[in-house]
Length: 358
Image (cartoon, rainbow, N blue to C red; front, side, top):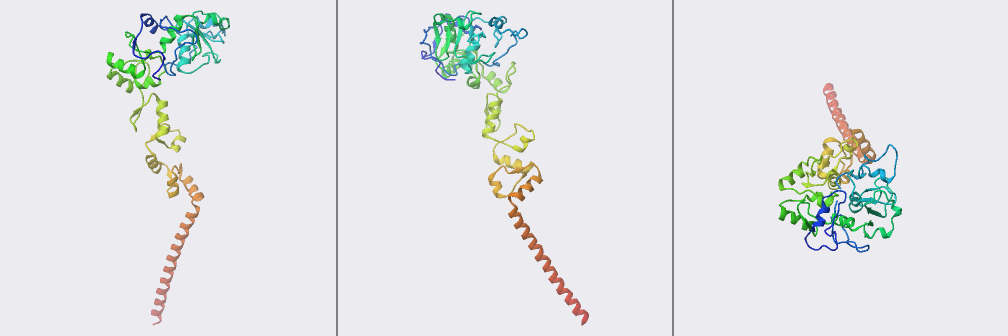
């Protein structure tokens, strides 16, 4: 995440009583921050906050009737998070979600498509109205906007709630501090709360800042090694480098880029088996496969075969002249040896004949 979410915040500050009401109320309950008319919105960082769950769930959608009327989507909550909706987000396809899920998609995931129909949403309206079609709104209905996200709000309360979500809010639910950036926030929670944020979660997890967990040192160690009751199993570690990664995808990418894999084992269906460097991999080739020991192939690297027959075919094709030369030398050695034996045998036979005649 970037360390600058808002162009107006410079130092750690304390939120107003109104803004604190908006922080922890899901579905967009009111906040009250200084606001900007259209064209005066604060600038937000690309990673100002970040969503741990899958982006889309459609359990509550009226699939049986096939009804795509906007009201049918909202009877049981947001089609993404399934939570009750206070402030709605609607675009020109007229599929409504809660404003928080829409904000996550646009600000954190950089996704501007409808979660239901995948239509690109160049403009989104945050509103209290559960039914009014997107096409019926005009500029006078939408006096507040965020230019970067192209989100239009019908009143100040909705706009303020959106802005506060994108600030570096302290995750402690009893703390009303807004920090200047991630480093400022980390220092704040260590100094004031004697707690820590997970650096990997801060870097990768797409949730709003205030939604991050705070840990004691022991809890943070457990978080890294074991995970928690939510099903998270901890941050995996590269045992070669002793570096932790956010998830398996990041670990495997590191291993593919920094370590070695055996292509023969991969073809046999053995996955995620890595060697620290090529020297270790070559030793594996020597022990478990059929490595070509000709120096030019050793220099090329990775010249190894699944079977002895494959290796012999390679040697005949690539190293045929060398093999022919070696065979010629072996044949010459045998011929000389045979001739020598024949000559010696001839001398012995001559001597035996002379002795008989004498």
